Length: 260
Length: 308
Image 1: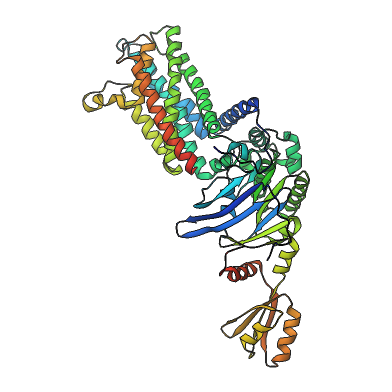
Image 2: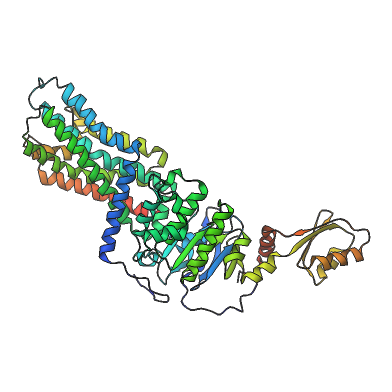
């Protein structure tokens, strides 16, 4: 970039202040979402409610076949970890684009990176809370056969899922109109959860295309981390998730920086 | 209106060079040249749809010009380093409304290299009473005040204010004007769009009048005041239009049906002359030419030649 110098210089920004700007954005992003129950309640409460219902109550006190409890636990952690990213980016980016917040922030000296990083950190913070609830429920009520160390390993590996979730959400937010972004996010969220075989086995065509869904790869990684049987190589799942995320983020960032 | 008396200042803080911008069929900017000089408060006046907000949007890099270029501190407006010197108050902006005003100021201050202390921003913008209230609970005028606090919190060298006092009551407007004078005194330049001539008169060191995407006049406040102090005379008279147009006091005269409409800076002299020349003259009406008439007239006068 060529920089002409026909005007007074602007004071430089120290690295400490740049990092501070990122952290401050993440803090205020989390704070405002905690204060927005329409967002925070479903994201934080739905995974634990679903898990309690399907994984604990319907399990009927551990009488289901061996492995059912573990499969439920892995399935709902995948579900739980995707929510904050999908909705935090999907709905909020679309709404903020629509209402002019994004335009305002683009006029300020805030790099696109800080806007996205704030939402990513927020999604991580929410996902950690969701995961803590699921691990606690799994250990106390869920008849999960994984030992606590394995449970925590599964939960930590799952936190990787925040990134593809954010990438999908960002793409929804960048392209969908504010009025329908929520619907898109929900359809994709639930669709991915069921079509990737998180909760019940797939057959036929749905089974053949299961690798299309990031949730499938995430679930295989979780099963591998928990020492359960899984399909495919770990490196392959990681590479596919990384490639999917990068492609979606690239497409969304291009659109956002051009059109806002 | 010539700006021949102005000294050409090198090193404009921001400038638009020959910027054109269309939105579909609508021409928003039609070859606009505009520069913001150090230490000035530049008022950009014009009726709705004149292209004021588009001009600011392009200076800030929010919109891309179809032709021409925008520079901010000699750099591209997309350059983060350039935007670190800028504070902004836009129209129709929404903010994270679950946050309190103090939190919004803290969040925005964090983007700048050397912001004011938060308490200082709150005092300077006069938002002490609403600092602890969530943005969503504020009235329209209070939201404007909060947005103003965000615009000045980063100690910007250049402040863009798009219709800042729209929706404010008289007290809040006076407070904001007083603050703007203080901010200019600290060496900050301000670009202010408005359609209130009084606002420009109260604050501006230089005024640019825009209409239909062009600069149609530029000059000092007193030059602009003369421009809009013109009166409009309407009457039904048998005097030939061409004769009236030839009178030196008359700046423009048109025939609208039976009514002759005259624009002049010297209403008394023209009225006396009209009555003397036509004893049968009727339906006489004299009123101050509104801003929109002044702008419309300027636009018509400048339609044949490129804006200067």
